[in-house]
Image (cartoon, rainbow, N blue to C red; front, top):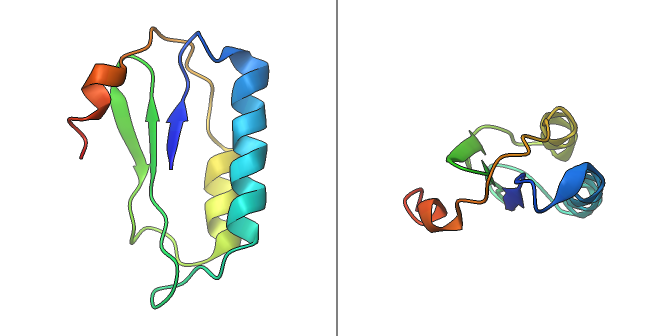
Length: 84
């Protein structure tokens, strides 16, 4: 997953993305031998919030997503490619 936390998203949009992601993850079969998820958050710089092996339950991932903060930085989408 990739979360845009730049100023173009605004705080309400960022909350909506978090809610959508939590709902989506809770509907998945997350585990070490099933679905794996990673999360990158970006504004000016990309940040790997958690990688594919950080969590193996949807509840743990949902908690990590709910703890994210809106950064309201400039948009640096060109830097996002450097994460991959």
